Image 1: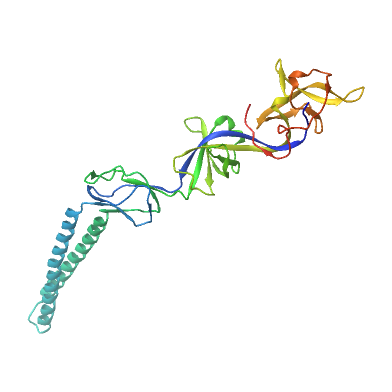
Image 2: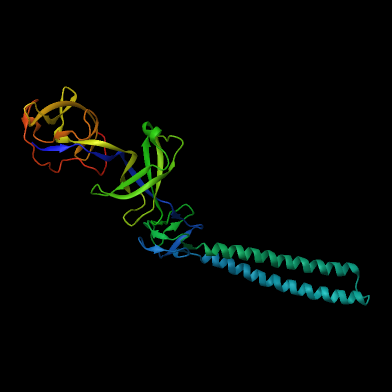
Length: 340
C-alpha cells in the first residue's frame, strides 16, 4: 500500500471572480466645434503624445471670420491714429486760444473711444483664433489610439466620439464581490490575476473597497496593476482570486478519502498486535480542495501514516505492506484553494 506521513502545508483560503481591466487614463476624443472632417491623421493602435494632431475639421468659415475681424481692426486702428492726430492739433490750438476746452475734451474722448474699439477687436480676434485652433483635434494625453468610427467627410458635432486614447501603462482591475462576502472584504487583501493556463501572472493588493452596494448587490473593489501591463488591455475580462487568509494546515490526498452516508473516512496504518502494520478506518472532517488534496479540519494529527491509494481493496484491520509514497503525498509548500 502507498503510505504518506501527514505533514502541514501553507494553504490559502481564496475565492475566484471575474475582474475587468480598466485604464486609469482613458480619454474620449470629441471635437469642440462642428463641421466636416477634412483629414483623419489618427491610426488605430498607434501611440501618441499630448499635442499630436488626430483630426482636422473644415475651418474655411472660421478663417474667413478671423480675416474679417482683422480687416475691421485695421480700419479701427486707422480711426484711432486719426483721432490721436486731431487731439494733438486741438490741444495745440487750445494753447494759443484758437480752440475751446470743449473741443479738447471731445478730441480726447474720440481717442479713447477708438482705442477701446481696437482693444475690443483684439479680444475678438484672440477668441476667434482660439476657436480656429479647435478645428485641429489633438491628443490631450499620451497613450494608444483606439477604434476610429468616423470617416473622411463625415459631419461631426461636439457630441461625436472620434476615438479614444488609452494609456495601458496605468491599469487597474475592478472586481465586483457579492455582498455576502462583505465582512471579509478589506483594503490590502491579496489579489491574484490569473493567466489563460490558470497560472498567476500578477500579485497585487486591493487599494479601494466601496462603502455602498451597487444595483447588482455587489461591492466594487479595485487593485492597481503594478507589474508588466503589456499582456492586458482596457476593458479586458480576467479571472482573479481574492486570498482571504493563509494558514498552515494538514492536507490529505483526494484518493485517500472515502464518503459513506455523508461522513468522510480515511485509512491509517498503525502497528498491529502481532507486529507489522494494519489498516484502521478513521472518520475525518475535510474542508476545501487544494489541488489534489483536501484540507483536513480534524480527525488526524501530524505524523500519522495515511494510506494514500488502493483503499477500495482493504478493510478495517487488514495488514498493510508499505511502498514508497508517490506524487500524491502532501508536503510543505504554498497551495491555492477553491471551494468544494
